[in-house]
Image (cartoon, rainbow, N blue to C red; front, top):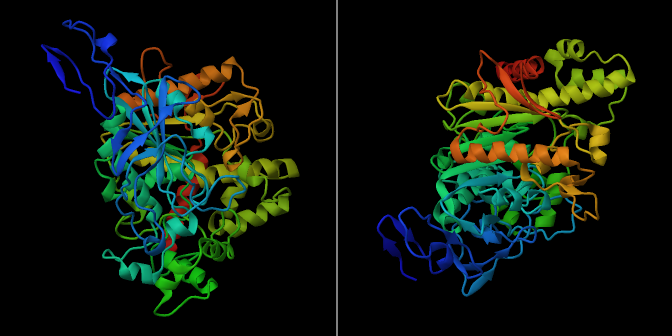
Length: 554
C-alpha cells in the first residue's frame, strides 16, 4: 500500500502492520487527524511475521502474545547473555502466550527454559504514537511470568498506551554465578542473566514497538516487588542507557543485590560461592564443570538450588538476586544511588500499607520471644533500637511488630532510599502510599498487603467468580465496588499520564506533590486520595543504618 500525502494531511498504510482506515481519512481536509488501525493481517517483527488478534476482554484492543525477543537460552546458551532471536518461516501464531520460565510453582502452566517471550497489547485505532509501558513482574526473582492474568494489558492499552509484559530467566537459571562462568565471559562477569534478558526485551521494543503504534522514545519501565527491585537495577545498568525514559518502582525488593560476584561478604557469601555450592550439590566440579552443568536437566539444576534455601529475610542459604558483577551492575548499588550514578529519568516509587503481612504468615513469629529472637539474629547491631521502635510486648503486638519490621526493613527502606537519592537528580520523583484494603480474602486478613495494588494499576479487577488462575497466590477477583473501580481509574490515569509526559499530574486528578528531601511529601492512595509527609521515615532510617553497618563491617 502506498503512502498518500496531501498538503498538511496524510494517511499512512503499512503493508504488514496497519490497515488504512479509508472512512476515517475520507476526503482530505486541512485539519483532519491521521488514523492508523491494527488488523488481523500479519505484522513483521524481528525474526519474522506474527499474527495476533482482538483481546478477549475488549475487541478495541489487539493482543500479540508469545513473541520471542531472544534465542532460547538452552543447551550451550544456558547461563549466557541472551542471543539474537532465531528467525522462523511462515506466520507465527501470536494469540497464545509462550511457556513461563522454570520455577517452583504449583501453577498448571507450561514451564520451559525456552521462555524468553513477551506480550504486546495496543489499541486497534490511534491517531498518534502512544507511550509504551514495559512491565517487569515480581516473584522474588524465583517465580512469576509476564503472562499472568493479573497483568493483562488490555485495560491500560484501552486508555491509550502500548503495553508490553515480559518473561525473564529466574532463580538458578537467571542469577547463577560461578567462577567458571565468570572465566568464560569477556567481561569476567556471571549471574545477572535475568537483567540481561530485560535489556534484550527493551532492545526489542526499541526496534519493533512502532509497528504496534508505540513511541520508542517514550518507554516507561515499571515493576513490583522483585520487579521493582529490577527497575532499580536496570536504572544502574550501562547497557540500558537510552532504552527507557521514565521508571515506576512499586514495593522495591532488593535483598541480596549488594553481594559481590566474588570475595568475602558478610552473611551468605559471594554470588560465585553460592554457585560453587550448587554445582557441588549436582556432584559437578573440575575442568568439565561448565559442560556438565549445561548438560544437566533443568529439574536437576532446580532441585540442587533448592537444597540450601534460606529462611525468609535472613542472610543465609541460596538467595536469588542480581550481584555486583562489575559489568551489568558496575558497583555496589547502594553506593551508586548515593552518588547519583543511576539513569536520570523521571521516577515514581512507593509501597502498600502493610508490606509485611503477606510474608509473615509463614514465619511462625507469634510470640514476644520469637519476635525478639528474629530481631537479634537478623539485625544484631540494631536490635535494641528495633525492639524499642516496634514495642512487641504481647502476642498481638508481636504479630503487628513483625509485619511492621518486614515492611520497613525489606520494602520501605529501599523505596525511601530510591526516592531520596533520586530527588537530588534533575529529573523529578513522586512517592506514593497505597493504603486501600481490597475486598478480597487476603485483604480481610492481611490489610493493604504486598501486591494489593496490582489489580488497581492494571485495571484487572473482576468481581468474584470462578477465578482459575491465581498467579503467585494472587487473584484478580473480589467483592469490588464502584469505589474500587474508581480508585483503579485514578491510579491508571496517574500511571498513564506519567508514561505520556513524565509527570503523573493532570487537571482532572488530585494533585500529587513532587517528593523532595525538604518537603518529604507523598500521595496516599486509599479511600480518598490525599497528600501527606514523612512516609515511614523512622523505619527506613533504620534500614539505612543496617545497610551502612554491613559495609562498615566488610
